[in-house]
Length: 87
Image: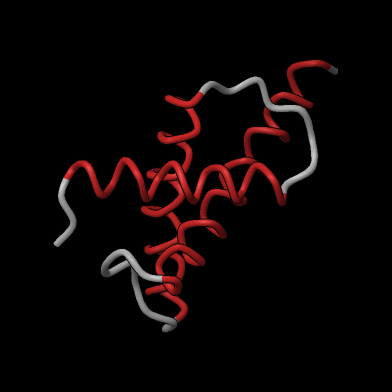
């Protein structure tokens, strides 16, 4: 079980990696990057568990990978929503 500080560091790490991988300009501060990573971990965990790959179960490389993929999914949705609003 991860504590709140672990989730903050975990979310920050996953959010930073996702923002580096996903192209596009994101005007997010450190707080929003942490939120992105935590939400990405939750979404990545649900998708990964549904597909039978496992879940986010601690502070390890596998869980960071799942959280990063979830964060990329969140960024993709954000980009699509912003594109719809601009057109």
